[in-house]
Amino acid sequence: MTKPPPLIFESSHDGGSLPALQMLVSDIFFWEILFQISQFAIKVASTKYSKVIVNAKNVNSDEAMATLCEQGPSYVVSFVHSMYVTARGMMHLYSLWNASNMDKIFIGPEGSDYRVAHLEVARTNILFTAYLFYDMIHILHQYPKLGAGDTMAHHMLFAFCSIINGTYGIMPFQFGWLIVGELSTIFLNWRWFLLKSGRHAGSLLENINSMFAGSFFLCRIGIYTAGIVHLYIFSMSELKSLPSPDVSGVPLSALGITCGCMLLGWLLNLCWGTKILKKVARARPKVVVQDTAVATKAGQKKRRSKRE
Image 1: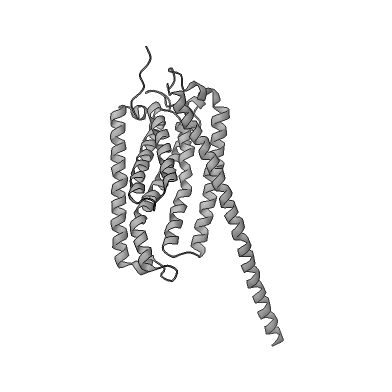
Image 2: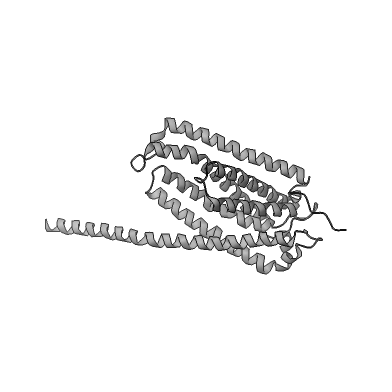
């Protein structure tokens, strides 16, 4: 007699599927409440401090405030989400760092050595999945201002992978190095607010751009690449054992989708990283030209002063 498949998110809570799903629903409401609070705060700020928020020299003040009021709350929620899950992702990597390859790739039953650490990962996974569902609702509501079909496809695919992992209890350590990639999203959201508020230049924007690029290459290229190598080379025997009914019993097709999405995500990050490097390379000659022009003018002023 074959073992029946587990219920959705059954491996994400000691109480089983029902309390895990209750957490999922409550987390969706949490993100929506945070959106409503952010929307109210931005609207109040726009009526009292619009001149402070928007640099009217570079953008139309009314249009900029309208954009911030409409789309800004989603970016505030994304900012909070990316900070929180990045911190938890670092915690997960630390707590499972010395675990065996099997404990890194499979959430053990109650009483196992890393049960507490595994359930913390499952909790973050539920929170992350809830955010994806919440965000898809707002993307559809404001379509295509917050994202188009590619964003929806990205969210649905990763939500599906998160449900698979939370249901069968797999990839806890891998989830850690995946989720810390949200570190770069913090600076990406910050950059959006600077640009939409008319701050198109200045040291703050330059620093944010640098921190975005640095965090992207650190987490989404460096850490992600190390994670992919560890998964596909050093954990291959454990990876092959996951479809066994004695381990997780995850269907081979579902495991293939999860592993395939991680590999595709790595390739996509490499593609984005190449684009970032090209933008940096195009920006550097402009800086050199400006610096040369400034030095030339300074030299001309010195020669004129000496002649006088």
